Image 1 (spheres, each protein chain N blue to C red):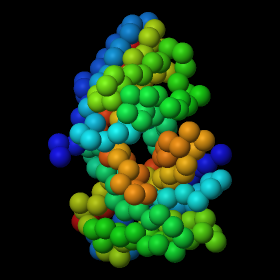
Image 2: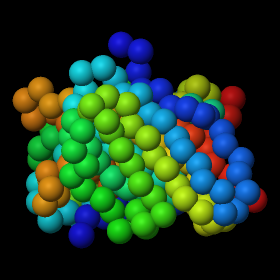
Image 3: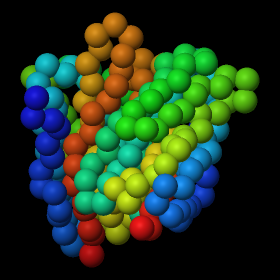
Amino acid sequence: DTGVSQNPRHKITKRGQNVTFRCDPISEHNRLYWYRQTLGQGPEFLTYFQNEAQLEKSRLLSDRFSAERPKGSFSTLEIQRTEQGDSAMYLCASSFRPGQDYEQYFGPGTRLTVT
Amino acid sequence: GNSVTQMEGPVTLSEEAFLTINCTYTATGYPSLFWYVQYPGEGLQLLLKATKADDKGSNKGFEATYRKETTSFHLEKGSVQVSDSAVYFCALSDQSGAGSYQLTFGKGTKLSVIP
């Protein structure tokens, strides 16, 4: 079990540029979540995949944001035309449901700074 | 909607002091409750959980009891150590309409333990 990994760990970009983050979940975990955490706040839910299907999106996920999970393995989160308000830590988590346990395991996050 | 309110920080304690971090929640269903911990420079780690009323979660000397009547899940530890210095997040997981079991987090409480 190698845990959830995220790349890159840090990204600095200029306003208006596009950025893409990658998340590799724990193998065999069929559920994958993206959260956003701003300074001094708890993580907030962005979107959720079960296998390759994106089943829920938060109202926080504007149309500049898109997420994919091809083949139900790794996931990417793309932000187009970045704005300074997008500066945050982007967290990925995965889970697997044996019985009723939906425990989520988090990656280290990607810190985005938009200048 | 769901929400979690936890004690504002920062909290500074001397080593071996007793710790309580208050957490209350609002949920539409019957949520599972969690405490996550974020050590400096690291990702979120699950500390303990409780999935139904009156359950007690415990780990590493920390405990929390799911109190449905007071909608609370307060975190306690009898004797804190310097290594417990971290940010603690209370969270709940409830079945949304799409069944995502997304986590709703509190804002976090920063704990500093001094020798």
